[in-house]
Image 1 (spheres, rainbow, N blue to C red):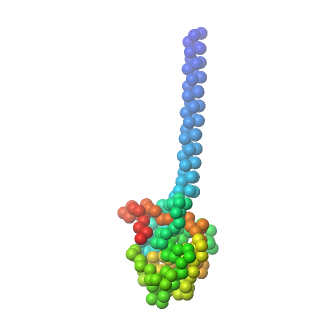
Image 2: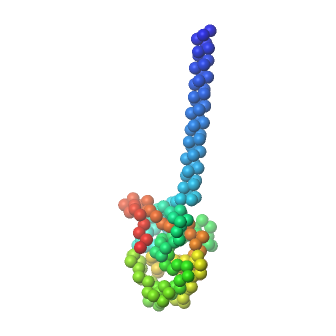
Image 3: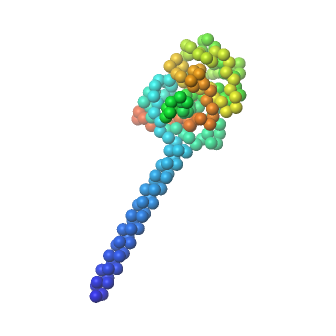
Length: 193
């Protein structure tokens, strides 16, 4: 009789341990999913470059992590490489470099020189010489929270010179290109200036 009671107690203890382990595992998986959701939606996200508009800084097929949190603490800066949604195609994002900041006037002359408030802008990163300034040959004055963006490959880029892209509103900026994670031989932080 005593052995039978001990066996029942052991069996009940085993069932309790299995139940505890199962609940612990479910809670652990729930926490992992919650943290993944928070990171993807509020901290960073993976994105893939499609096209050649950012050559030679970024190439077609590059996989990046986009920092979605830093602009909560400071405004975007000139030369930041940003990701924003294309307004005419759902789930399509563009990646371009900020050239003009809120309150500035941007103008591009026939030779492709960029002027910010009448002064020639100096660029230190690799970029193509612009053959067609597009709509920006006329001065473009940016309002509060508006940004003027260009691709580094100026002759193969739909950017703020194109009316379908135009000025970018700050609230529409998804984030700042942060790290290239693929291809493996090019892994590293993204150079913005």
